[in-house]
Image (cartoon, rainbow, N blue to C red; front, side, top):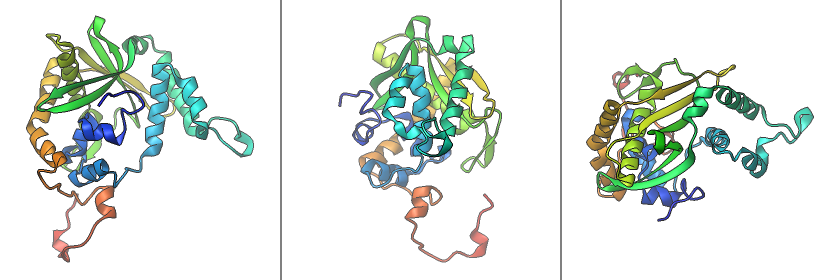
Length: 270
């Protein structure tokens, strides 16, 4: 399957290729659920996160230099009634504030320079993967991914680890950067990895921002996580193994059928 920006996020592309977000969607350590992931791949279920997805596309359109086209193609981002008719909706006005923070930082703009939204495919651990690099600068030895978060210094609870995590661990960003680095290295045939970076901008008012890089040790550790889990993921995705329900996610709650009546002592604290 030939990938482009129009079909990259399609159901067909997700069935044909593995991606980092799809991989994490199978793993409980990243709040994934095998049953939900398979329901998504079958077209039976779609996660209710369209708002955040669209906001992410707005910021990425700015990074790509296509924000004017995005605005023209998405009239729903403008208010259609009242005194604000014709103006950007409040959440998109705030996205402009976030963009301004990035534009006014020379170091951020240096990290985000280069080719934009570069699609690369390659085989890794016996399965085809797809990645899309937000900002690609092979001539200077780096690539970057742009992220919008609630905040940088917060803590996130992990049901799997039963502990608080920082956003890097909670969202699996080190794993993502490791896969991106390895896929790019395999596709180009280079001897060493490019140095992965992420640029973070927060949804706070005023927004905070940060640029973070990952070293080779982080890449090795991220690839080991994939290595430890990929055979199970491949087996479930291919239909060779039955998916396990987590019984906590939105999909499992919506499709839950009781198998027995619990004793009150079975209830967990977390």
